[in-house]
View (cartoon, rainbow, N blue to C red):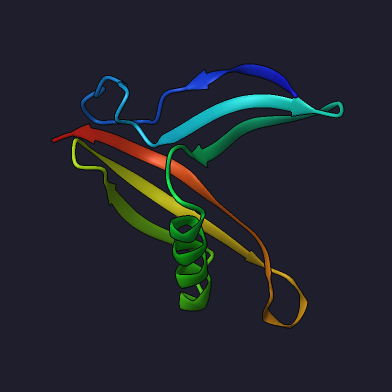
Length: 102
């Protein structure tokens, strides 16, 4: 993977990033293909990720707006869900829309 850099989430108040952040947006290329923006959770359990993605998928929307409160920061997220044939999860990933300090 060729790491291209960190991308700060869009915010109305330009909240600073710190060690309490649990969302990482970055640019990278993999095997010659560039991903302009990739977003990932940092420091959360696999159970949390599976529960969040499954719940959003079962709701049936491609775009699912949620707020993640980490106890110090609030992240506005859009959980993108794409299905495959016969209602199976194709891919699901978070997009960071905003970041606010409490």
